[in-house]
Image 1: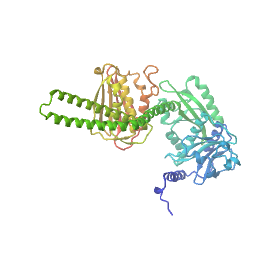
Image 2: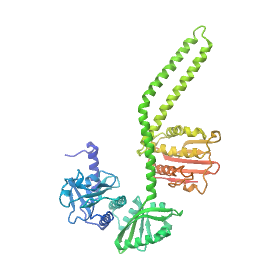
Image 3: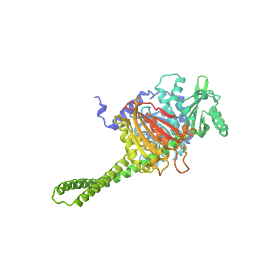
Image 4: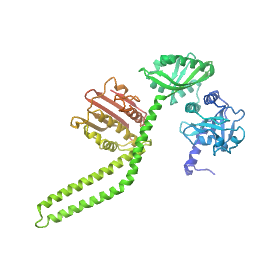
Length: 550
């Protein structure tokens, strides 16, 4: 009997797709390979435990691609595995003492050989997002994994993921390294035995702000600040002797002379008769930026959650008030028509009816404003949502301008020039609103408050090729030419200490790239600044275009 997968519940459908992804890699029941063995040996050493495994979870079993500490064991039943729990999570799954954990206390591999008490597993994902298994470390005694060891385990599991991706490519060792460099989410450097750079990935180029022609053939040690070169030299020598090293908070110098902090995991590779040093550096600066972005998203989501709660309490009474005010307005109009038609109707009563009409209109307008504010704020309750949907750019801009109205009216007049036939864009509406809000608030803050008649905020939408273009312009003080290239750097700000984190534009730039768009800036000191946002029309996918500064 054939199972129709489209009729399966979502969880079972995912499991069937996951198992198919595992089979596509063709890795089950293959002989040991040194690349995987090196990783489990390094994982056990860094985490201070005797056992480490690369465990791939099949339908009824878990099979070990690499194994240190459990000699003679190649697989176990899935029903007794810790990894079954670990593959259901996105981050490291830790059991510090299995004997005291109700889920595992009676497990036969806890109560009997090999008497496992500690387990930590980082999920290994395929390129299309299916969890294939884990890189895990185990101990016969209770154990606590430090934050640094968690980072080490995640860094190493990323290497397993890269090796699995490479397995899908039937190519020579050189091609495998090239794919490794290109597919990594971290900065990757391949060095020769003398420590010279022979290959690197585009992310490493962008991180250092240096071109590949400048970096190839250069000494990797020379890329570090002078006071960090000797420790780096010693680490590379240890790598040649031991095969693996890990460097925490290793500094490299960017083209602008700034220190870029990396956590580096390094492996020694045998390539024919020569040896190569593979260095994978996780950017700690990016981690800080993402953490701050998450904090900002959480704050906006909290505002939305509060607004959603308020809406539940406010919307019903507001609806009653609006309904009654509309009824009273109609009743007043009817009354006026009847009274005016009566002979001898006092003239002063006409003035009173006009005044009543104005009062009712103002009351209706005020209630509708309250309703709109609550509705607008609730949009931020989904700020963390990255799902794409058709978005009306003009409506999204109007929403943001209403949010910024109080700040804007004290500073500048607003000019809007919208293309009313603008096509929709397929993006996350909440994230697009976050970008618009950052650009509008930045523009307002660039102008001197208190004289709105002297400044103008211009918002324009139009089409440019296959893109929707949004221009946000101010008539503020402008940006100095020497500062302009750095305005999208994380934590860079020209505001006084305590007045900003320097993350608004950096976050906006990152979000725009993820939408497949481009963020441009044009500024003239004393005349003002224009930020231009380009987003792809319709549903067509686009590669991140980046940023243009002029």
